[in-house]
Image 1: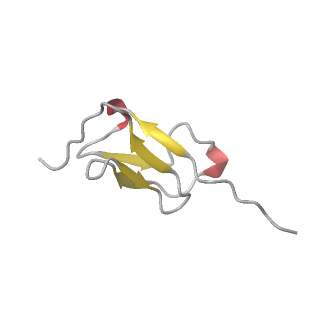
Image 2: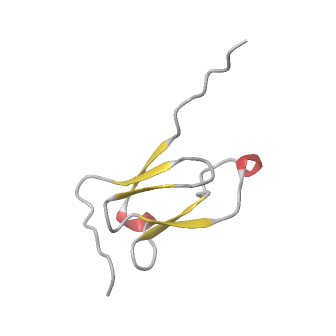
Length: 71
């Protein structure tokens, strides 16, 4: 028997989703409660994307959203 793994989800992040110095958090409010893991903050301002170390969800800035990192 072989298990097939589905690829991690990709979430397109808008400016309204970005908090503080360019971070998003995972799990995000749209995720099912049962699939929760400890909340982690993921930097998307530096490269335009970041990946959750727990569930593998990739957070990517939507086209046209400017990156603002630091002060």
